[in-house]
Figure (cartoon, rainbow over the protein chains, first blue to last red):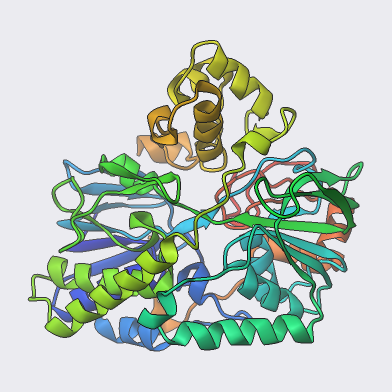
Amino acid sequence: MTDVDILVVGAGPGGLAAASVAAEAGRRVLVVDESAVLGGQYLRPHPPRPVDTPLVRRFRLSGADIALGETVWHVDAAARRVSTTTVDVSFDRLVVATGAFDRPLAVPGARLGGVVTAGAAQALAKDGVRLGRQVLLVGSGPFLLPVARELLRTRAGIVELALDRLPWLGGAPLHAPGVVAEAAAYAAALTRGRVPVRPGWYLREVLGADTVTGAVLAGLPGGRHEGRVRQVACDVVAMGYGFLPQLAVADLAGCRMRFDAVQRTWFVDVRRGDMRTSVPGVYAVGEVTGIGGHRKAVADGLLAGHVVGGVPVPSSVRRIVSSRRRFAESARHALAPPPLAAAVAGEALVCRCETVTAGEIRAAAHDGGANVQGVRMRTRCGMGPCQARMCGQLCAELVAETAGTAVAAAGRLSCRVPARPTSLERMLA
Amino acid sequence: MRAIDERGGESVRETSLARAVRSAGTLPAAAAGGLRAFCGMGVCLECESDDGVRRCLVRDEP
């Protein structure tokens, strides 16, 4: 058993910020992350090398310890103990900074070889891998722009960037002027790479016998291309329809969740003044509390780090938090994923682990399972090893669409112990 | 604890997924050889390597 004052789960920007401040305050801090490198997906450098940013340098000097390659599979919040791949850790305060992952869309053909999420495409590109010769990048939100740039760096060919709408952040840049320069750099990269950018389309189907040979795009309902369908020849489809928070650790800790009607998903409910969750001793920062990007994650982390470190929060940090929350709030509507549940074909696999289709979920919802728990019992949707991370959100949207209720009323498929596949030997240790 | 001390040197090893795709040249070439991947972050846990065994090639765990 390892004993620490503060345990931080997640070594992305929010987790590193919280850990740094708490360690600088003299607390014994341990950060665990399942990746082999710190920094999370955002700070992961291209080409692969140790991350070196001001935040990471501050973390390295803070005195906090780091354990990489450690996956949390159990949290006992009452006993203040977490179990990871190889060790049990007891803590006084827990900071959940587990980030987010791509929100997938279920379409026929999505299990063909060559279909990946936008996050996977970016991760492979950052590892220096050339993804393909004809990559179709399709989805929603500004995240697809840096993905496109990474692909171009590896000389992958991008046949098209097909979006629901142009990623416009509204008034958000007023609260983070650097965003304008970032957007300009992405636009320049797309222009240099001669990447066609086409708004108003969504992915309807992936074509191919064993591997990808093309895709079918359809005009977005309500958009100017509505009713139109076209084919695109490609050898890779990389899709990303926004993000979903990685709630497993917060689930296991018993944290209360809140529903965000704009993002149409659940987040950890925190007190904005100190990032406390509903569970005593448990705090949450970053994307698990609301999609807002790395700037908001760092601000959350700085705030939580002072609170769990037991030191006053300086007014300078309060100002940063306030500014970055305004940025996130301004961007929130622009980052909203398109409502496409009604457009998902019946034969599309939603639960990829248990091979449950959209049609089967609609039928189960129609037969009385007007919430996701009922559908889970009838279809096994969400009962596979990924614990509904890939299917839970779309399942809820399909149930709501079928039952004619709000998505929030359909409920949520939560994570259970073990959060990740774990050996019996380890569980019994 | 399987800890990597940052101050002592960070591991920058690539994932098995990246290694497999790099070895094949591109993702389509790897897919033609039987490799399947989706999330690329250790979330979906549904990779299938070219030996037909399903395991996460990002976290290298079953």
